[in-house]
Image 1 (tube, rainbow, N blue to C red):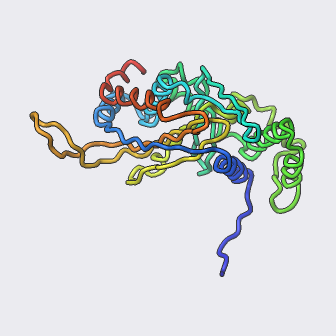
Image 2: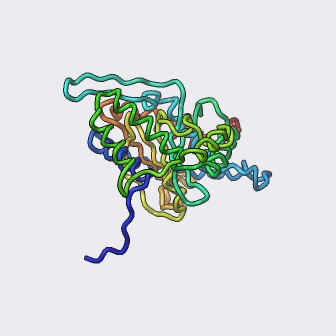
Image 3: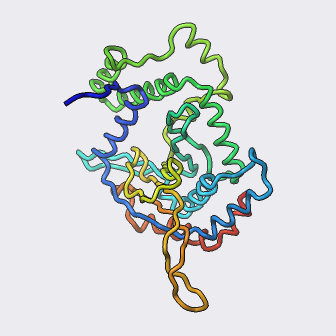
Length: 304
């Protein structure tokens, strides 16, 4: 067969490959496809932007982040990390008060990076929007290879602490040699880069593991007509939520007391969870809270 292109893994692809491989090898996934009707929410969202300038507009993605946060508050067991030893069947689940959302950000150069949206449990929609805008601006000024190298280095140290010395040694060897070596900053370039304050670039806290992941698949292509049916759970997290794109579909509605088929706005979502830590009953409060918000979307006026 004729090879048209060969690309050796850079640090970003290495990290994605490592994390997702660990996920599918070790995590027993369970998933639920949730397809709520969001006509009322979308209408209220549009009203939020009626008197806002281009720089002040709130995105639907940000509104949905706040909706998801409310769901997590109603189902706090989803906001947790698991530690489990399958050899001796010993484990624990740590549930967190802080809601730190791991979410993929598309950078101006087209690259994708997962960042940590910290302490979103207390933020208004406006504060969330400002936070994300600042994060993207700092990401655009950051050396992504260097930032990811720091994350990878810290993960290697954790591997050593877990007693996996050989695995850590192989990682270090591969990072320093051959076609797959990582070309991170050195010497003066490195010193100059780290003189930049973290208020102007991404720091370790921006890239560390969150408490739960939200993947906005719908933002990649707004005209998509599919449904996310399963996403990988990023260890040690126990949940991931995938947001699709708002779609118009035929739905059954009550018109003048009679059932009729009308066109409604549907937002396909996927809720995947680690079955070692959670059962479907632990996720139901999340779904019920979102149902409540979609039926009474005027509540978002209080979140600004």
